[in-house]
Amino acid sequence: MVKCRICKKTNTKEFLNLGQVALANSYLKPGELGKPEFTEKLDVWFCPDCGLVQLGTIVPPEKLFRHYLYYSSNSPMLMKHFSDYADEIAGMHADKKKAFVVEIASNDGILIRNFKRHGIRFLGIDPAENIAKKANAEGIPTIAEFFNSKSAKAMEKEHGKATAILGNNVFAHIDDIHDVIDGVEALLSDDGFLALEFPYLVNLLENTEFDTIYHEHLSYFSITPLVQFFAMHKMEIFDVRRTSIHGGSVRLFIQRKGGPRKVMPSIAELLALEKQKGIMELKTYQHFAENVKKLKTELVSLLTKLRKEGKSVAAYGAPAKGNTLLCYCGIGAKLIDFTVDRSPYKQGLFTPGTHIPILAPEELLRRKPDYALILAWNFASEIVKQQEEYTKAGGEFIIPVPFPRIYDEKVIK
Picture 1 (cartoon, helix red, strand yellow):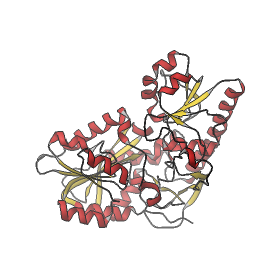
Picture 2 (spheres, rainbow, N blue to C red):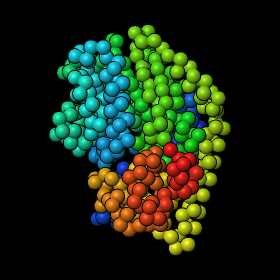
Picture 3 (cartoon, helix red, strand yellow):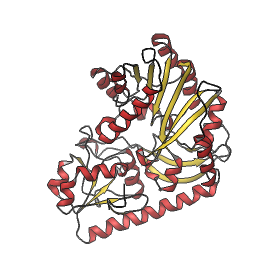
């Protein structure tokens, strides 16, 4: 049995096993292709007591995050998303001179850099030493460390209390979330707030977004278990909203119990939605697992058919989610000739487990494959717009989720 990281009970049920999968961000150099590659079981469990969905097998965070190749600022869509997000957080501070914003897992500073234009003091903390070094070189103060109760107390001692603590696409990456919230309590001012954004379990289930499951993502959150979780720490969610980023996410705002901000109706509304969607029922997850198997069969069949017809097939993107999809479906260099990615840090490398070469985006137009499978499907509209010349030249894009199909901008947004 797997212990639930929220309620600590062991009544959990496994509903999905994606097999032995290479680590999503462990891209290979050419000289590493012939060497043994680390893989780990990718199994997903449901807790019927509190409703948390989580991985059963944990890879040590030091192995996952100390050297990281995901730089948030490579996406114009993300740049706009986080610029607007920073404006919202800044607007929640009446006195910007007294404000102090801390971001957990700040990456290359795509979000916190925006507080400079608001005149708000800010600080990032990120365990990826290579990314923290880059951020500091660009004038974005960043501590190269994991955020926990120990590092939070050290930050409070040196920098003072934070009026806002932000965590974007990181809370789901953390095993001991209780210790992280202990750190938040130590660092946060009495009237401050915590804002967390992460992919929403309801979207994952509705759209068969199984590829968003990988070793870095330890939890798949809905609001139901988190209400209980924050109550355990004498905190409360006072607002929540859904966003379209990353295939569907939620942004939560949390304060100390009885804090100065009014608890909004949005929490009750999403709790009602989750009840309707069967978030607390095992059969919901078993049905999801059936859809995942069906998607795999359909995608492999489509790609195999195209290859038999003599069509050339490439891919667009080398995201972490794409590596889960490729590994689980067994899609390698026999079906996909190459993939392209905007990140210069990934170009020249190979995808984990499947060893597909990663090239610069310009190669898509130069080589003109008949089809390109969009692995970064959450940015499909942005990608198709960027690659207009490719589609004008006759190239077509394939979207893998929630079911494999040829891209049609009229129906896919």
